[in-house]
Image (cartoon, rainbow, N blue to C red):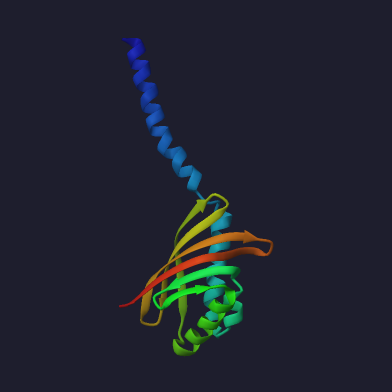
Length: 145
């Protein structure tokens, strides 16, 4: 009877411990979260100033971005499209960082975004480069509220 109770307790302990371990694997260091948030905030600031080159500098050279208007490939294409956006949609761009997940050595971030009447969410894959975190891939889904 005692052996069965001990086995049951061990089983329960393992059952409770495994989900905690799984959560810890995807947990991002708070400093990394702050760095990712700083990249998004900087992007908002330079967008609002109309600086497409500074906005695009947050992306890797081979970055891709999916928008409601279609895909963009490469930093140059992203810069060009955002120069047009800045002229067509002046206003205050803002991101609210909602979630950050570790994906091996990369980081996935989910944000809520707003630009005038446009509201939506962005999903980013960040990679660390020599000069800090850069966006390798982005999907933004916006809608009018």
